[in-house]
Image (cartoon, rainbow, N blue to C red):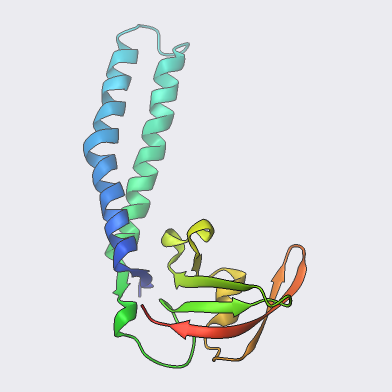
Length: 157
């Protein structure tokens, strides 16, 4: 049985757009670069050819990865969710030990971007919050040591 990949609709659409870009723009461009490099003669010492082949391999690997994720995607709309427990798609406001407030939305692995306040449900802080309730204390083990947070607010938006 294949494991579903949870993601928000915005993440699903972003991955679809990236896949489309790779298939319609990047892939044809690298094929042209390979053909051009081949025209230069001896392939054994042709740096352009080897660079283009390497790029082609990276593009094909990413295409396969995206197709796999999209085929197993379970798109979740957080606005349809309710409850008093933290779950995938929830926007959670945490208070740290210094009463500094931080807000994160729990998203899929491919969608995570800490700078935008989106953390993966598989990240240490994401895993520690899942299933917790308003007012619960959350312990997160980070490379710099243990950190404690209190769940101040849980929203589904």
